[in-house]
Length: 384
Image (cartoon, rainbow, N blue to C red; front, side, top):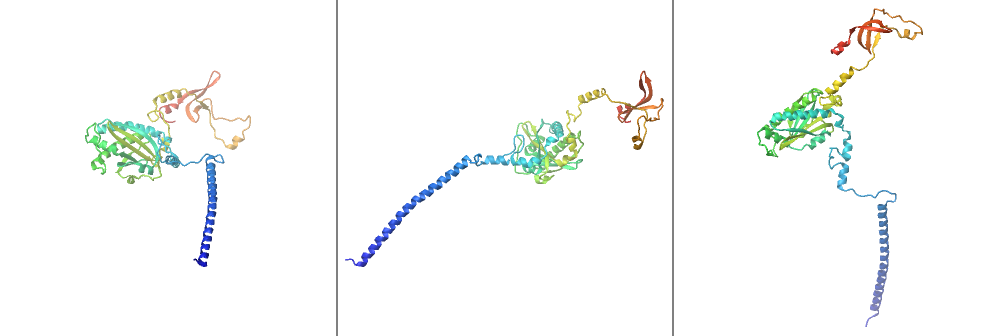
């Protein structure tokens, strides 16, 4: 038989289980509330997404740029086909002066191409063609960082301009010149041994070629402004060839040297400070191949000048008077000239004396008989 205490404990346990069951039912009811809250949040998310895609204010839908578009915006994908930078790089380099503002440079370096082609043919006894790739404006620091190594950099000095220039010879042209000068066979590519410094023989041969090119460069500038370019030093490290500050602007001229199946590139760089002494001359626009001396135009101009009509004034006498006397002139007042019928008459064209003679009369016209012609002094190259 069970006693009364055990019956009481069983009743308490049953009541406790009943309470737990009621709490479980309440929890299940609360779960439905959680589902409602989750549905409400999902609806809000959908509304936000639709507002973003449709745009309440009529703006275009936003999207994320890919890497190519970012590179294009920043200008990191390189220059255009014409060598012009794009994006933010174009804005940064907009302060560079365009070389097209110096039109005489085209004529100077066209002349240099013709002369250098002939000089290098005589120097190497080989068929060499020199051509210009392009002329552009760069910053000096950017150019030094873009030089492909190994290469030789020749620093030369412009004596009359009191400044420096830079000439870069790439590895292909170095080995091609060395191969040609040392009797390499044609039809075979020059041997390239990378990873070693250039030997003394290679440097001496390249220095001889640089001397030939600098001589032609002097002759190219001579009709415009006589200048002498002297070789200063030869470097293989761009850091040792610094001739200007990194942000300074410079003119870069790229040449292509072809020797049948061999060749390479040659680049000449002039800082703007070097060309400043002849800037006014480089701004001129000349016609023809002779730096402005076009014989056809000169002949036509000379022939037309003889048909030009100019006013000629006959001066009977000149007097020096004060401003007070001139202001006191009255109508009908007579001015006495220190001239007689036999006085010498001076003929002038503007302020230039042309002829002298004596005054006379022909029919109803007053005439001057020419006794001396001063214009012969001008036609013979002299002065009055």
